[in-house]
Length: 162
Image (tube, rainbow, N blue to C red; front, side, top):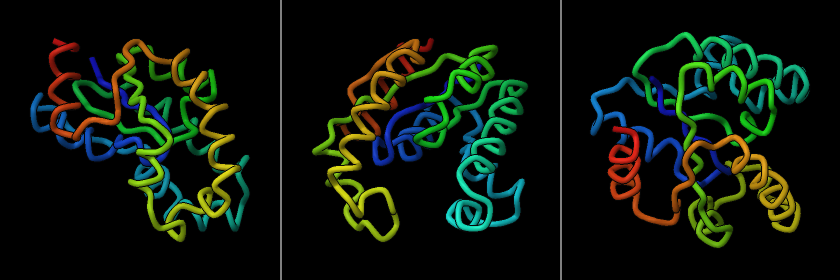
């Protein structure tokens, strides 16, 4: 059984995921890294060259691939589990955990908008956060407070997934 982490950018999926992998002795996998590896270029470059629809197809392919993994902690991209086809793919062999971080905490964590293009327009980022939150809750088997420190969050997830 895999543990799949979902949530908005800055929710802590990667940091918590790496900590959780250490605690549980599982392999850590990041879907964004898998997409970049599959395409051979960065996600911003994929968006620039091919557009979002192409990226979402790559992301879906990766979600189907991770369904075949075993004993992994998987950090998903912020939009991955807002698509039902991806939720259906990962749920075959995983428990989905939504890191429910408040927008204020996310803004503090994200900080520099240069690395997070969606945060160039904070109002748009908040709108996207609100839209996606409902989808994360619908996808999740477990909802956990994502405002806590990564180690504490990881320990709580490990306990819940025993």
